[in-house]
Image 1 (cartoon, rainbow over the protein chains, first blue to last red):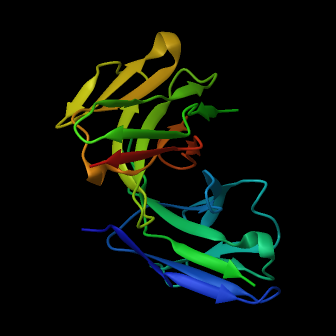
Image 2 (image 1 turned 120 degrees about the horizontal axis):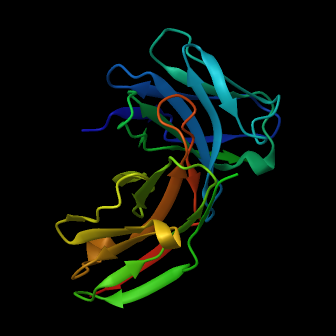
Length: 114
Length: 116
């Protein structure tokens, strides 16, 4: 049984448009992450989120990106003005917490910027 | 900074062969966590195993086994009697924290093809 779902599964957008990717955890989790995977490449960390604020972000996560948890459940990644190079698979990961805990990934959202 | 190297990019085997996927990691932290994830053709990332740096005991789970050696900074993954369903990209990953901010640093992945 999946611990987290992501919507949409595939998003096609025009360059310069804003997109919002959503992550919906099935049960209570403490830590949230976004990663991206450009086609055929490795998975890269974007941002971690804990206690309603960003814990850490990578250099990829520039001013065009933002995250929030607007309703205490969904966790969203917003890209304000998409670029061609934003085309990638975006994965949400969740973690309950504790020293023995593990990140579990959602099925991903494939973003295509035209 | 952390680094994970998966030197093998693509491996092709015939069903029932054993195959070992290599992973070498770099970190200056004395406490760290190692992971393997599987990415089948459908694209999701499936967690396989997590290992703590202070636990060098090897692990076996069915046809899967993992060999963690701190002396060589390696965390290799062996599939015994491979099956076509094992065809996927396998990622090794490293984290130096638990809980908040435990971002994963991934290797580039190894594409495993198991032919019938």
